[in-house]
Image (cartoon, rainbow, N blue to C red):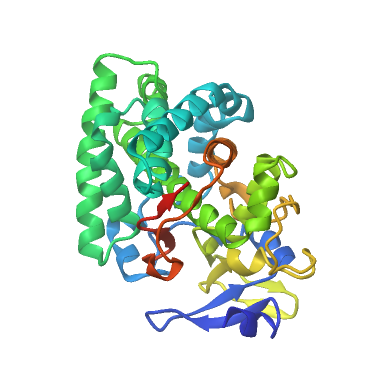
Length: 376
């Protein structure tokens, strides 16, 4: 269906689940141009902002800081967080991530085949990394994994709101504890900005929630989806395992073609925009499809082919413009270590059940694999 739409051109009108018509952008150049345009707003508190699924109409999903803000407030929050997610800072975490990944594979080997790659590998990696980064006790991981999934993949607005309220109460206690006794975590450093008046207590709670959701949901879903893609293409898996294609190169193709979210950007237009013969009017909604932007034939030769040697960063899986993913350096590093170590240490990795038995779900804006039984 997407291909049929994009054949009409890179800019088309489509109808959402609630009957609203919005602009759908499927072209790479057009998508990047619009994501960099300051006449687009990410502010979800306005009715003009397109709601992409029923549960995302919940108040908690419409008032997210950072991702749902415009300048100057967005710039203020981003400035305080940028140093925490720099490339240098991410690289310093590599030994810890390698220890985590190897420890999880040790556990899988102890369990013996078959094992569930989601439960025992994909989900714990970002949980352990974000726990250490934010200063959240890992023993609470079952709670915060369920809460973040409840917000992003809720069945209805009430469920999303309830999950968000629970998570806010938990993080409020965490931030309060950091205010009383400073730790060495990111949250502890954010609390220092409360002392200077740059942030409020509630802003630290909300920023922590957004970082936790973004850090857990995307990475934990990308790993099993990427493994499935590699298992579907054994020659590519063999090239990765043999070192013919480095993991750092392979993950760019995995990001391009198996992105967990279809939306590189959901925005509303604050002032008329003329682009390629189309008039996008103030108040219109706009959706940029990463699925199609990442497959633009004007950018990628044979764009529907999966080729881990391609190594192109010409994709918008991490977005573009001022809202480009803050944690992309950390996400890339986790994926690189996860895939390189997994294929090296479990050389016979394979599905433990027929592929058609796997339960995959697409709920709201996220695509995830609930379970991935593997053997080796």
